[in-house]
Length: 78
View 1 (tube, rainbow, N blue to C red):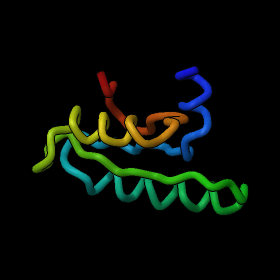
View 2 (spheres, rainbow, N blue to C red):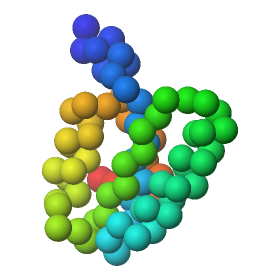
View 3 (cartoon, helix red, strand yellow):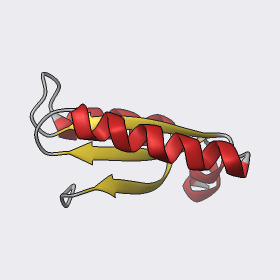
View 4 (cartoon, helix red, strand yellow):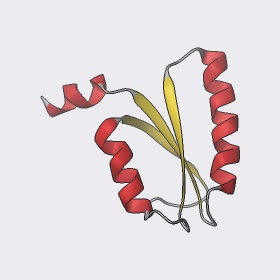
């Protein structure tokens, strides 16, 4: 089933900032530090609302390949 396929994908967390990728990169560092302590194989992807790549396209690209555990940031990613 699609749900099984999705849960078998590598896990990921998306960090988001509104002004570009600066804050998202900082959050990525913090999240990766915590993940390392937990010993979990989770990728972290920073995305910025104001960036050369459209945020919807970037998030969809991640969703197509990864099981997204959560979004971390200061804005609603909708």
